[in-house]
Length: 247
Image: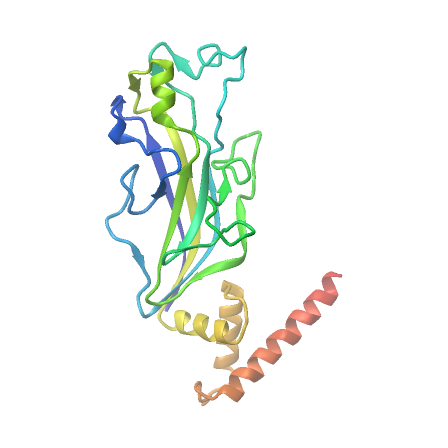
């Protein structure tokens, strides 16, 4: 059994002499794990039978769309001659379970997700956000795949063409995305599934609490739903007491 906090960062850097194949189109969904751009892995995040994932936090670079000084990208330091050094496209991040996006608009249609302006990353001396906390968190269950995708709303190719840019240095960071999640496996994953069945949030504290309750009841038949329901009732009582204390 184990529980591990995992953090993954995706970065899209410049690639030297400009080539349109190196950068995504506006409105194109990009997987930060298996997409065609940036640092990626080779396999989709398929949850194995003995694992359980809780996705709870993410953020991305805030984007800019217009120059900030006198209508000039050069004066703003965004364009230096023919090199792109500081222009960051405005991006939105969404969480996917299989093919379903977590964030949708009010008509249950596709939404790009949360912008880097709303959940900036990385933190700076001036801005130290808590990033976007998923509440409730998103669960990825056995045999499901999960993904984090970013969609740029600004057209990198059109911007490069309009500004006469011929080079995007490798030191230029066009975008970053990070995601933080908990990975439970073995008996911890089994407990996580039981908590989910009982309508209890899957957190590290709740899994440890549930395990302590089981250990205190030696000989418990873990398949007996009455005993599980007793644990759920004890948990809810504990939460009620905690809420009253906080109020």
